[in-house]
Amino acid sequence: MRAPSATHLVLIPSYNPGPLVDATVRAALEQWLPVWVVVDGSTDGSAERLLQMAAAHPGLRVLVCPRNRGKGAAVLHGILAACASGFTHALTMDSDGQHPAASIREFMHASAMAPDAMVLGLPVFDSSAPNLRVKGRRISNWWANLETLWAGIGDSLYGFRVYPIPALAAVMRHQIWMRRFDFDVEAAVRLCWRGVPCINLPAPVKYFRPEDGGVSHFRYGRDNALLCWMHLRLVLGFLIRLPVLLARRLS
Image 1: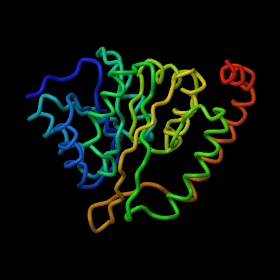
Image 2: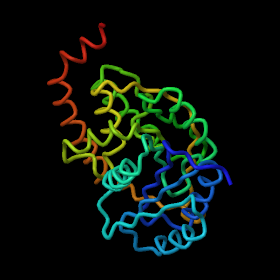
Image 3: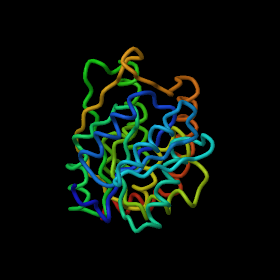
Image 4: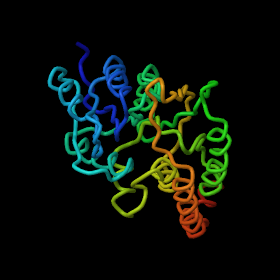
């Protein structure tokens, strides 16, 4: 068995992911050790299956949260535990099979070569991608780039990323937001504000139909309203930081 990394781990937040989670975790384990899954109050029986899998695989650890608090909260729970165990970086990926386990090593290598940076996935869509989702994310990307003065965020919403754990933990400890669907965008923007550089790497994304086991918790009305509120507060934060960001861009 491949020796586990002492610095970089795969972190998978998971909430009622459907049957594809088993294959997702196995695929991640084939590419990297260790893999941690944070079960965010799931009620679909996936926690029990994952705990059984972890009992048989020393490279897998499963953290079970008693109630659902959101993706960002699950990631924070995981990175705090990882930091306490000595890890410095976490690659986050979704549990529903959308993200490419085959790209894990490439992203981890890029992170190891530039440990102060965050490695952001640039989604490569195929015909399975809903057109509304593909076009809609352009709006969030435009705002995220404005809020950072085009510091290099290629895609603000794609959750397949490697984060420097101390920087991300510091960002999340000092404010109450980015605990739910707003996590991915706000994490990238706020890390840019802290001066964390971006590395963008292409990575395919796959959308599964319900009949193929796909599960989506995205709700257009609720989550777009959350994104609007998020960008409003980020714009306000951007205006406060504008002199510093301008100085950084001009230096």
